[in-house]
Length: 205
Image: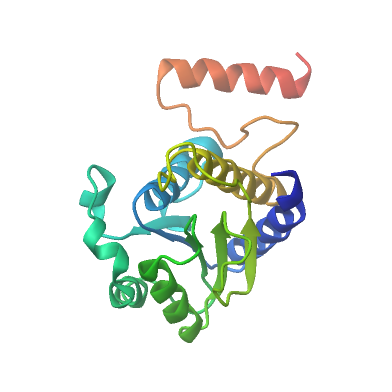
């Protein structure tokens, strides 16, 4: 993670600028990578008070792949391109997530995103990944304990990268103040109590 810090900061700046200019973020992934993108996107509204349209996830196999593996679609670059064509426009940011850096669904999506004049980025655990993108974050996690099971070290590192990129972007956009979630929506008793504590902390009372 330390060696990727500059790449993370650069991508966070791009994400903040994209949102400031009215663009949206699309995470694209297959399997574990797709689910991690969907998880990060889903956490934006409750953590940072963002509108749902700001961050979305495109996962190989569609929504059902969030619950069970749909591995046959991962090898289809045309499916990735189709998913992007249906959702992405110029000015958006598309972040492809693939531990190996070679997942055909993701590469197809990134290529189509470029054709649509979106900004493209890659989050990978393979520093030698050949994908042609505008930005990349490479977290070299080495061999897995269980060979081929990238839900382990690669999955953990990927989650940390996505958390870091989105959190730094939200700080840049003023949605975090002194480490507090100032756009928290107090929709239940627990959150109302938390909002009161945040207000008291920031006001010095």
